[in-house]
Image (tube, helix red, strand yellow):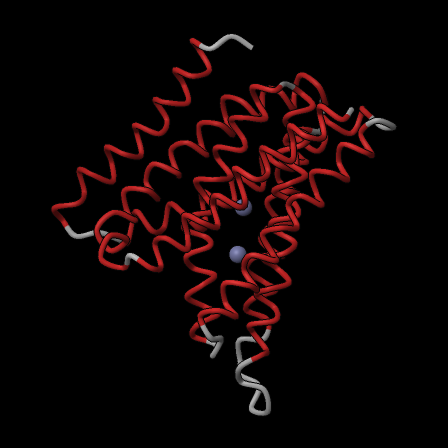
Length: 248
Ligand SMILES: [Zn+2]
Ligand SMILES: [Zn+2]
């Protein structure tokens, strides 16, 4: 139990806190991020799609059963509600509080997102340590562009740099809470693991289809086309070979 707890906390650290650090680095090194963020996002999209189809969905089917695809669809919709609907609900600027309205919604949805990331990492680890590591890696990769975006939104809402860093770090910490609670509760109800993985698959599909792939399609000048395609395929190929050649 303690060993499992320490492992999922370590993996959450890789996913959320290192992802946060990566996002911070990109905000700081703006020239670097202008040049390479499209490569990173392409690679992340490939990795996450491959992990979802080759890893999470098969495991969810194996341990959950018949409702996997329905749950994946529900997971996708839930994530849409958290990420998109919630954030755009208050988009018409409130005259009295033009600054805080969307900033606080962003912080709430960010905290919920990171909490779920922690849950997903822990559930995956409970299925197999290898799956846990894969999912932590996928989390790390999607968190870098996500955290970069979080910083940009907070700064544009009038947050100082220091305040934006603190707010974003605190929301990233909720992944530890999600991971810890999952391990504590899983001791009692192991039959939730399959359904949770089904939901997680939907969430990963939403992240790649809504946050990452559109960036590839619209982003990038003509001369970067080969780079985005290459890195996208590289991400898929990397996960495929990891699946094939690394034993459980
Ligand atoms: Zn995330
Ligand atoms: Zn964030």
